[in-house]
Image (cartoon, rainbow, N blue to C red; front, side):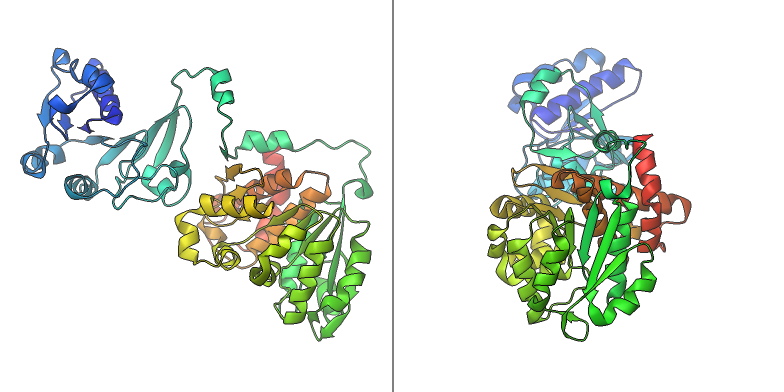
Length: 464
C-alpha cells in the first residue's frame, strides 16, 4: 500500500484495514511523515496499529530506497498516492516512486485515479502509475475514459458510495458516457404500417474523380441506419460510375465545372433537391477545388435541413470557419484530429492533448454539434455538454470508416431524431458494429463496408 498524506492516502488506510480484517496481510508505505497527516487521513491512519498493520514512513528518496526490495516482493500494490486534485507535473521524489512501481510489472490497483493522471484531460502529468485496475467513487472521471488515460486506468470499477440520486441529479454534469442502455432508450420502435416515405429521405452530396466509393458508402450507410430513401448527388460525369456501387440509392447528376468537380454552379440544383429532404450529408470524397469551396460555403449558409459535414466538406470550411455563424439550420461536423486541427488552426498534437476541451470550445463558439472522431470519440454540443463513446477498436483504422459514420448520422437525422441524438446513436452503433467484427472476424482486417453490413445487428443488440 503506497499512500500519500492527503485524502487519497486516507482511502488507502481504509483499504489496508479492510484487507487486514479479511485476513490479507498488508503493509502501508507512507510517502510522508506521519506528523503531517490531517483530518480524515489522520483519523484512519491512527486506526492501523490496532490491526497490527505495519507502517513504513518514507518521507524522502533515501528512506524509500531502503524499502524497495521489500515493496518488490509484494504480490499486489495499491496506489493511494495522489487523488483527483493533481494538476501539475510529478517531479522529484514522487516521480522516482512512480517510475519504480511501473518498473515492477506487478498488479497495481489504483484508488480513485492512477497517481499522476490528470482528471480532466486524461494526460499523464509527466509520469503516471500504470494501473491494472482502478476503483473510482460514484462516477467515472474524464481522465478514466479518454486516451491515454483509459490505458493508464486499466479495468475501471465504479463504486457506489451512497450518494442520493437527487443530489447526483442536482449536479447537472456536463460530461457523460454513452451506454448501451441509453442508446437503446433513444431508439424509437416503428409502427407496423411504417413505409419508406415516413422514415426520412437523405440527400448526399459527395464524390469526385477517384473518390466515388466514399460517396456510395455514405449513401448506403444512411439506408443501413434506417432512412427510407437516399438520393446521391455527384458530378454528372461520375454518375455512371456511382450507380452500380449503390443499387438501392437514387442518383442525381449535378452540373460540374470540370470533369468530376462540383462548383457553386451546382448550388441551385442542390437546393431544389434538398427542398423535400430531411437531412443533407456533405463532403465525403468531394474534393477541395476553389470552386467546390465556394459551393460548400453557400450550402452552409443556405441549407434549410440538418446538415452533416465530413471529410472534404470540413477541409473546405477550414479557411473560413466563421461562415458557420451564418447557418440557418443545425449542423453536425465530424472531423478526425487532423481535420479538427485545420478547423482550429492548431496541430493534431494540440487537439489530442485536450480532445474534450477542443471539441467543447469549438461547439460552443460556433453553436454546432461536433463529433471528434478517434479512439473514445467525443461529441460536443452547443450548450457545452460532452459525451464520450466507449465503443470501437483499433481495427477501425481503415479507409472509409468516416464515410459510413457520416451516412449513419444523416440516416438517423432523417428519421426525425434531433441532431444531438442522431450523432450519439450513430457513433455508438458504428463502434459497436466494429466491435462485433473484431470479436467474430479478427482484431483488424475488416473494412468499412463490413461495418456497414453490421449496422442492423448493432441496432438489434441495443433494443433487444
